[in-house]
Length: 179
Image (tube, rainbow, N blue to C red):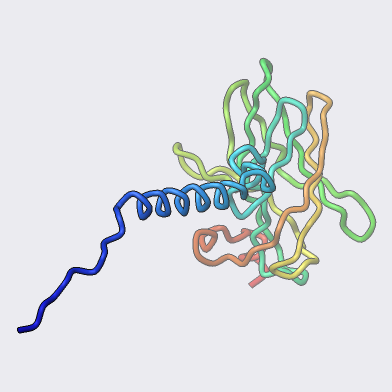
């Protein structure tokens, strides 16, 4: 006859203590990332393809240039928001061959309102702000100066993107007439 005796069982208490210790060590290790890394939701960033430019109470968001580049015409895309209590006229300018060239048209924005630079609106199509020639290639940048009639100005490095995807319908009429 074979006699079996049960192996001594460890009490569940040391296992629980070991598991709790491991959980505490893991929590402390994983939470240490917060000490050395900033909270990204507190950081300013541009969550779009374009850049932001603030000229006083006038804010331009998602500013970019749609063009084939390398001398082809282009259209400026972005949204101008007037946070002032009075109307503002906004003029964009670029540096072309060493000289600042104002782009047309000038955009008028009522107080508390916004206007798209590409001419699109719920009421129909307006006139887009155009560049006669974009010297940078797609993937490059163009420095655009934003000047307001309220006396404020600032500039931004706007990326040049191809007229594809969401920008496929933003084709300059200047480019159309040269074809």
